[in-house]
Image (cartoon, rainbow, N blue to C red; front, top):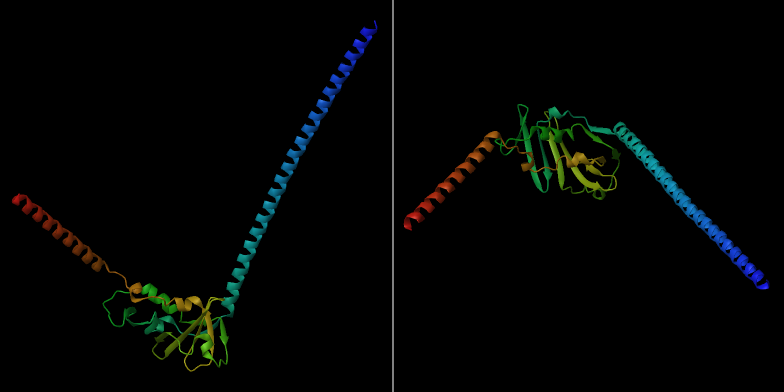
Amino acid sequence: MYDRRIRDLVWQTEEIKTIAAKQGNKHKDRKRRQKGQSVIMKKKQRQMIGMLLALVVLAAVFLGIRQYNKNASSAISTTEDTQETVLDVISDDITSFSYVYEGETYAFEKEDDTWYYADDHSLNLNQDRIKAMILKVAPLKADQVIENVTDMSQYGLADPERTIQYETADRSVIINVGNLNSMTSQYYIAFPSEMKVYVVATNVVTGFNYTLEDLVEETTEATETAETETAETETTESVETVETETAATGAN
């Protein structure tokens, strides 16, 4: 009887331990699930925060670009409004012009509204490019005028390596080209005997960065002649090859 009670107590104790273990496991499982859900929630929150930050950055970039474009347009408009006309010359009135580029001087003259290379009128020039060049200096506009300059060398104008010259029916103009201001992308120019320096847009000078080859257009006649000469050369070479092969065959 006594042994039976002991066994019952042991069995009950084991049952309680088992139930307690199951409850403990359930509690642990619940904690793990909660922890997993918490990790997932935190991950989702981080993703949401990342997406929001990305949207904020994109919005800031978009607004920045729009403001930059607006300021750039405003700056261009302001520059055009504040430019000073230095030489009010009509481009069609220019009858001849010359310029120095890479140590070479190139001169051109106009006859019957057609531009020719002064040393060889047989060359066919790109008339549109020539006219575009002239428009850079006629009329000539400056972004800034520096008065009372005592030292032209600081602007590269004491002994300029480049010049642009042109003539009309009643005037002759010489433009000395000085240094490029790399900070503002503008050139310094001046006229002989003047103690003024004019600050102009880069393309006023780079518009004359052409060699004679850059300005010459190949005519249709020249192209046809070159093609004919090439074809004749190829034909001659083919005939000579055939004759050589025939002679070799006969010798064998």
